[in-house]
Amino acid sequence: MIANILRQLLAPAPPPLAEPDARLALAALLVRIARTDGLYSAEEVDRIDRVLMRRHGLGPFEAAALRAEAELLEVEAPDTVRFTRALKEAVPVEDRSGLMQALWSVALADGLRDDLEDRLMRLVSSLLGLSDVDSAMARKRAEAE
Image 1 (cartoon, rainbow, N blue to C red):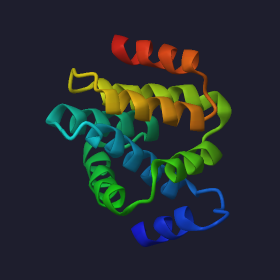
Image 2 (tube, rainbow, N blue to C red):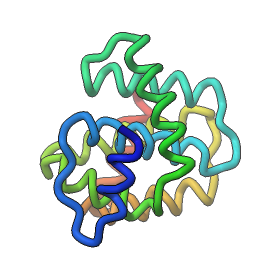
Image 3 (cartoon, rainbow, N blue to C red):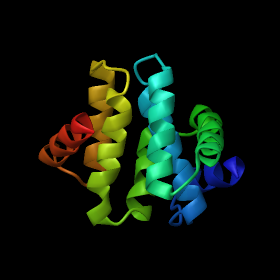
Image 4 (cartoon, rainbow, N blue to C red):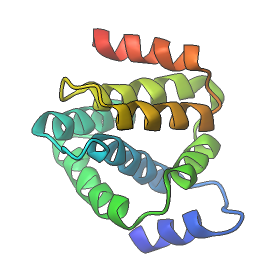
C-alpha cells in the first residue's frame, strides 16, 4: 500500500486518492506534524490514534496499525505540499476545517508551540484553501477539546 500511495503522490498529475489511501495520507500528515519539532511524544501518538478513531470510525488496534503504517510512509514520503494537495482533493471543502482542527490537535498535544510547527500549520492551512482565520478558529476548537 505504501508503494502505491508513493507512486500516486509522486505522479506529475496524481489522480484523486481512494478512501484507504486518503486515510493513510492523513495519518502520515498527522505524523509529520507531530515530528516537526523533533519530538514525537507519547501524547502526540495517542492524539493521532484518537483522531484516526474519531474521523474514520476505527477501533484502537486499527488506528494504531494505520498510524504505524503512516509512520513508515512519512519517512519515505515526498514534501508536505504533495500530501496536502492529495488531501485537498480527497476532502470536501466543508470538511477541511475539521481536518485542520485534527492537525492542530496533534500539534498541540505535547503542550508546546514550536515555530517550525506553526510555519508548517500555516503552509498546510493555505494549501488546503483555508484562511489564517479558519486555521485560528480550528486551533481554538482543538485547544478546547
